[in-house]
Image (tube, rainbow, N blue to C red; front, side):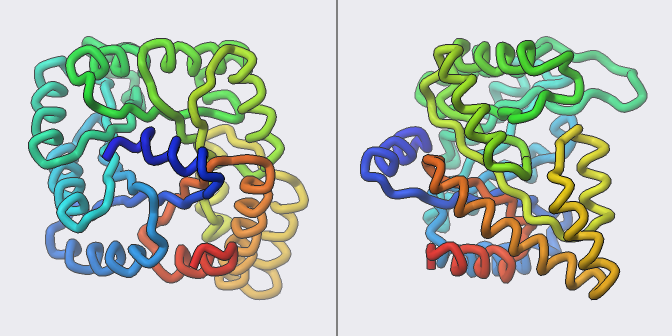
Amino acid sequence: MRIIDAVSRRAAAGKPFLSLEFFPPKEREFRPGFFETVDRLRAIEPLFVSVTYGAGGSSRANTLEIAAALAERGLTPMAHLTCVGADAASLREFLENLRAAGVCNVLALRGDLPQDGSGSLGEFVHAADLVRFVRREFPDFCIGVSAYPYPHPESVGFTQDRRATAQKFAAGADFAVTQLFFDHREYVAYVESMRGLGVAAPILPGVLPVQSLESLRRILSLSGCNIPAKLYLTLEEAQQKGGSEAVREAGIAFAVEQIRRLLESGAPGVHLYSLNKADMCLRIASEIGRL
């Protein structure tokens, strides 16, 4: 099933949805536990599930195997696909293997540049180049792309960043999933600005429940994401009073409220970064009335 078709049907019917992102284990001995988590989360009835892979496509084969297994379980998987350092032949082979496994949805990403500044970008410089390639070579595929309510760390500002996203749609993208953010108003403003650039495609907000102050600080340093001062102070107070468990509780409570506000603001659905944590996702789904 093409994700864009499912999203469009749900939007037309006024039925918001949840989708999930999974981080597949690299080691095979951890796969049984991973699939137990997946099976538990089927209770949420996710519209689709995305499957990540390592930097530079380092675990592309693993992503393929996991995506195929999820399709066999009756889920609709979307495989991540990055193009930094990749060549057309290897990407074509991966996409052909996806199709053979019954997977026709990809999230087209540029991917992270080598941290040491070495290496070549390869045949594809921007995510739009990858979108254009997939659309040309595999016209039956559904293509998702990333979106940034706040500018990408490498962008010089909002205008350049949003034009770059619009270029992905001009190249053939079907929908977008945002990177994490913490203020629902940023999503509303972002969608309005993209509509002003002529982008009518669905833009799904991505929500990441905070699990610890340490992980939050690392994410903020890498992504350049903004965080409301009130939320940060709430998390710090939780850390002081109740430690790591209190921070997780505060993070889940905020995610629940954020999702409610996003749906009230007209988001067609919410993409939940699951962190492979079944209990957390089931609790969030229950508290927003999706179970």
